[in-house]
Image (cartoon, rainbow over all chains, first blue to last red; front, side, top):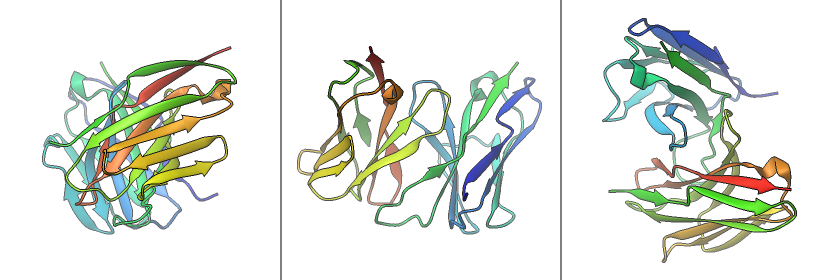
Length: 115
Length: 109
């Protein structure tokens, strides 16, 4: 089945120790997104790629970086995780980013715990 | 600023009907989405409205009034598995999705 796969599902790290989260998709979608979601809050968009065109949200901290080496894969790097970065990180894809029913397909998420 | 408002939590009884409201103020409008999110899981797409009126899909229906900046999600014949958060999201004039914080729906037997 075509899908969005995130690894790892659960990540525990120490304060300041870098973390990389991965996302792969078999949907051949052009757009890939990284969201941060904290408990009972709206998902917060960190980055998105339209094909290889990188888009950084204005309020995304410099501590977060992203890479999309090819259509299928996208990575989220957290350079120096702080306690406030503990959250669920959601990867999503869409066929395109324009008008119409631009439905997002989400991965199962990576839950980050910072000790 | 842009804003999506929905109730934080609602409780309903198995077999009943519940309506979850969403009001929005955004820079332009290019459609409204409802997603379902079970605890600890990713959101899954439920419905999309871009024109005024009601869209029905099985037990779930979604309504939109663009002039009022208002939508609701109607769930009929509630089942225990419908216990989840329901997220309203609006696509603005820049095709950015603005998300609500979600409504946690608790279903009681």
